[in-house]
Amino acid sequence: MNKKRVYSGIRATGRLHLGNYFGAVKGMLALQDKYDCIFSVVDSHTITVPYDPKTLKQSVREIILDYLAAGLDPKKCNLEIQSKVPQHTELAYLLSTIYPVSRLEDLPTYKEKKAQYPKYINMGLLYYPVLMAADVLLYKAELVPVGIDQEPHLEVMREIARKFNSMFGQTFPEPQRFKTEGDYVPSLAGGRKMSKSIEGSFINLNDDLETIRKRIAGASTDSGQIGGEVPKEGGVANLFKLLKLFKLNNEFNKFEQDYETKKIRYTELKEVLVQAIYKELQPFQERRKKFEEDSKLVDDIINASNRKCLQMAEETMREVREKMGLD
Ligand code: TYM
Image 1 (cartoon, rainbow, N blue to C red):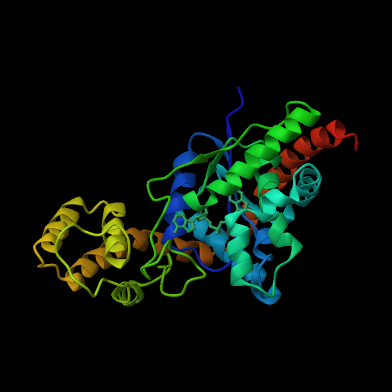
Image 2 (image 1 turned 90 degrees about the vertical axis):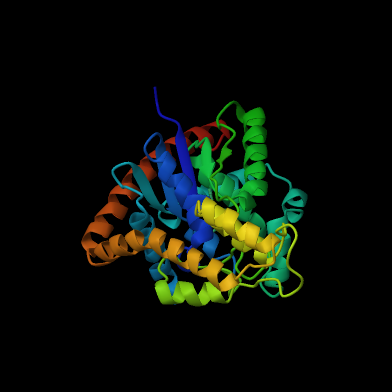
């Protein structure tokens, strides 16, 4: 029996942050022991928003190094660079011919990006979820470890799989999201989720102790009335959510009580978080240094993975071309 396949990807828009780590990478780590996994740096998705072509290649490399340092093991999973497997874009084009434009225009991520980059509204941005569907379906993956923000894209993926199967015969599984405990890591800036594009909202996996302290010190706390129940939304709520995420249950209970009795000291709570984050990230940072120093090893890993990915991808494409009458 073949093992189930798993696919996930991260854009090369800077170094990984705690949101990527808890929402995606932790899921990848949990699945690599059991399934056939492909974990990608999705550079073709990266170029749908303004970017610098001169630094893109290095950014891709940084994510591969982050993957390896986080514990993704090339003996257990394949590390892919999306653009090195051209079948992604071929399949995306073919799938785009069976999916309505109106549905893509309605997606929240498309609307957000349009608002964020009003001068950069391009076809690739609209096409983004189709390429994402192609990423996963290319490998016939059934599980996708991603944060909750990607759920609308997963829905598109399933719709495309169903439509293709009904038009051309059973071909693709309907992929499901693999949920992690941290599938929604809150922002440090008080708003919604931790995000690379919102300055002051994130902590990078390569941040040293002082940087972590500085960033956490900047995290917003309510300036208004305290006492009563810990709020469900906003800066204070987010700090409490982070305590939970780092499994600081005793501390959570203590600070909850302090909040209720109006004795809370945010500097104390923040320092507890700083130490926990640093402790989690230290082994990652040490492992990363080793990979940074061995670029031949990293090249070999990428090349070996790429060969395997190309083979798997071509197998699906032969079937798809034949079923669509393009062989
Ligand atoms: P990207 O690059 O925006 O984010 C990478 C992964 O990190 C997760 N994530 C979070 N999880 C929890 N809390 C947060 N605050 C947080 N911020 C980010 C995201 O959910 C994601 O899992 N469209 C994808 C990339 C992609 C992809 C794919 C993923 C392209 N093709 C195929 C899976 C399968 C994206 O933009 O991720």
